[in-house]
Image (cartoon, rainbow, N blue to C red; front, top):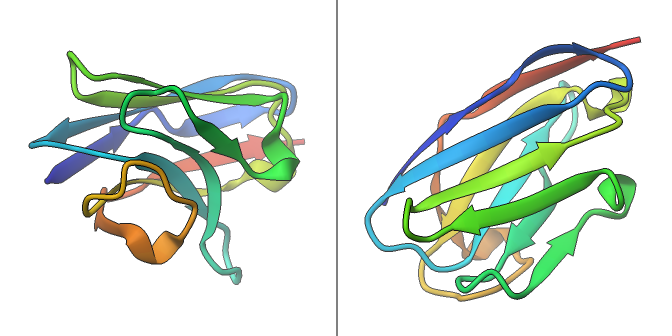
Length: 120
């Protein structure tokens, strides 16, 4: 599975961005992760294969929404009310077969990352 993430950029605090991740090949559970400079990669949101189950990092609940379009084999991350602390490189990833998991080790396929910078 190959993943191509896009949609990052520079935005002012309070603004919005929509990240997209186009996948080639069959996918199961998918998720968005982020890594800020000097910090470990963390889970942001994950979604089950059918889209019926989701999980969010507490820090983004109510502001971010993960969704997927299986017909287009694409997963999205709508980010609203962005804060400077959301600044990071955002990665999309797909599991190796798990339909829904929050364990980063289960995500075997990773996109190249898209940079999000939120200015104050």
